Length: 110
Image (cartoon, rainbow, N blue to C red; front, side, top):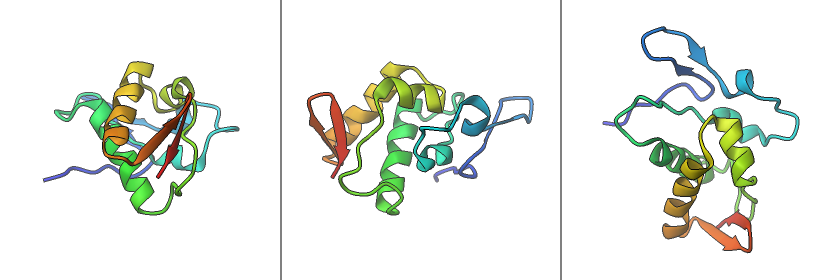
């Protein structure tokens, strides 16, 4: 059974505190869909897979459109509060699933 959080919040373990993407970052150049990413770092599902799944869901819902470019990996990592390696792993899953296409350093949604 999948466990979902509200789109803009995540609970901090043991504290009940809420962590939002907007509270961690300056959203001036950030795509609006980034605010709907909610990752649980203490969850049994690896964070990279949570990120890949949420990006896939956003694409399937039409929030991320075909042809839309993924932000630079280091920016996306900063915006969602993970390391660049985690984002790279999530991107690799989506490339393997043919949801993302690579052109040089850019990734675009299929």
